[in-house]
Amino acid sequence: DAGITQSPRYKITETGRQVTLMCHQTWSHSYMFWYRQDLGHGLRLIYYSAAADITDKGEVPDGYVVSRSKTENFPLTLESATRSQTSVYFCASSEPGGADTQYFGPGTRLTVL
Amino acid sequence: GENVEQHPSTLSVQEGDSAVIKCTYSDSASNYFPWYKQELGKRPQLIIDIRSNVGEKKDQRIAVTLNKTAKHFSLHITETQPEDSAVYFCAASIRSGAGSYQLTFGKGTKLSVIP
Image (cartoon, rainbow over all chains, first blue to last red; front, side, top):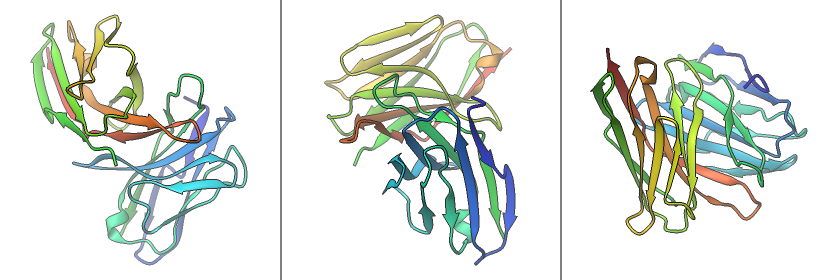
């Protein structure tokens, strides 16, 4: 579990500001994912990445931007934060062809005022 | 896309009793079904998973069953203990063209084990 980290762990921002959530993994997993967790909705996929420079949309991508210039990092940016983006954000990684288990980071609790 | 329904949303059992959580999925092509446990304030962690070529899998007090025809799968926890109290999520996915699984999660079941 210590192999995937997120920062910051807690963030308070204001509507309209840009916010970037960081995710870093040390396993060299090919796949990385961003989820948001909201009460009553479970975990919903925002974006995922199959490898460096390859990203694709998930279920709820609107308002978010991702990049993956290095295998170990997968930052998530809210270009203009809205109150509806208040949530807990989890990053995950997996290595296809093996156990396919997705390992989750500790999460970032984001509050947009 | 895939849709996963999970029931019940809350479940209370006495310590030592069994707990059963059920999920249904919509896409018959789904072939991987993991279960995650999330304790309060913590990250989701995989507790057991099953693939579509297997009907049942056990790991100590935890078991998962899969009925592909009915498109449902269940988590069974026997001899429940207070430390089993958590939110449990089921998920279903299809291996994507690039090789990994993209998961669709159920909305979760909050299990409370009463001492």
